[in-house]
Amino acid sequence: MNAVETILNHQSVRNFTGQSLTDEQVKTLSEVVARTSSSCFFQTVRVIRITDREKLERIAELSGDQEHIARCAEFWMFCIDLTLLMQQNELKAPFPFRFFYSGMNDTSLTCQNVLTAAESMGLGGTIIGGFKPGIVEISKMLNLPFGVAPCLGLILGVPDVNYLEQQKPRLPLDYLIFENTYKDVVTKEGIDEYNATLREYYENRKYNRRSIDWSSACSAMLGNTAAKTALNPLIEYFKGQGFSFD
Ligand SMILES: Cc1cc2nc3c(=O)[nH]c(=O)nc-3n(C[C@H](O)[C@H](O)[C@H](O)COP(=O)(O)O)c2cc1C
Image (cartoon, rainbow, N blue to C red; front, side, top):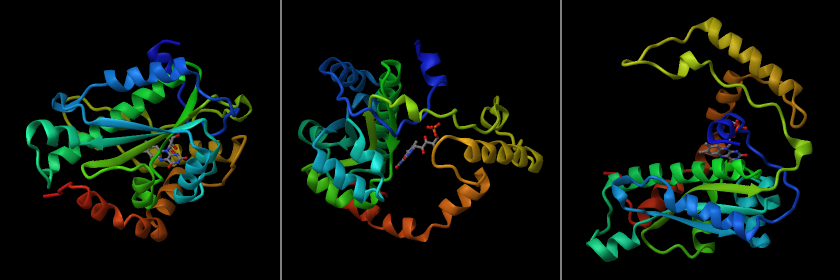
């Protein structure tokens, strides 16, 4: 598949055959990491491949019992690493906020690039942000030194085709793309229509059927106080790793 076809065919994959990635696939995806655009060409992205089943099981637990993490072939943790800049260029902690900002940009771009490349190779995966409540323990588990912090995870594997679904419907394109100036194009009818489309998707998909729509799913997510509380240590963790938010 070419790049556009791959991207337009995307769906998150959470069920795998149990096969490992080949050395060749890992090498290609590693080259994708290196080739991704880099803010100021600082090259601050580092990836830790987690293949150890015990570690995967613990990360799954710390991520709110996301079983698909324990079942994937491997989990790639995309981290910001400022240690090389500290050694080479006298960057000192606390790191100005722009390093957090550009580091998040770079890790996100790299993670999505790897996912797209993996999909183009017949692999599947899902981006994982849900590890954040366990960031302190995971950071210790991965031996991350001062100046390094995990930003985004990615599970990868060979898709179990029995679990492939219809693609999840998105907001209409004219809600997403504007020319030259921001426009408020949202209407109640438009949202009602999208909610009906998404409800139909959730009620009729093969697995994990639910009777919800987009608005109710968002409000459930936003109102989840346990999830919010679990993220309280996040800023302190990043500060402890040398990042500043000033
Ligand atoms: C930053 C980010 C974090 C995410 N974290 C998780 C996660 O922790 N667990 C999970 O199952 N999916 C996670 N996802 C995947 C989204 O749920 C998924 O992309 C979205 O529901 C759209 O579905 P699709 O990718 O199949 O089109 C995450 C996606 C992003 C971009």
